[in-house]
Image (cartoon, rainbow, N blue to C red; front, side):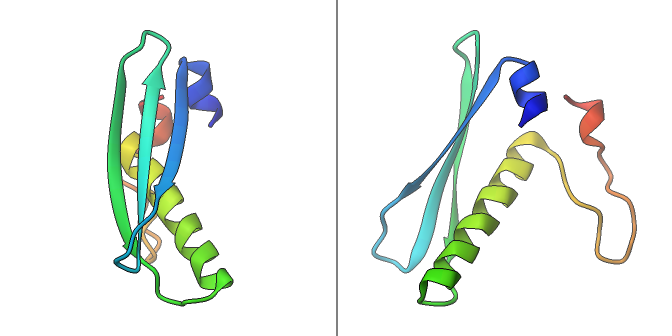
Length: 89
């Protein structure tokens, strides 16, 4: 979050209620100029217990922020990511 803060960008992520057994998370990035961008991601809830819900929330928050900032983790096979966060922030 520090690179966002250092560039005058605030992060807001909010969950929306749903009857379809899926999490709906809206991620909004707001610049100090007033400009903003947002996207809503949907993720199924695999386990119907508090731990399953917590896992789904953590997953969707992490991946939504990564997608909004074009920052991706290395591939599982050890290949480095195509884009480096430092190049963009």
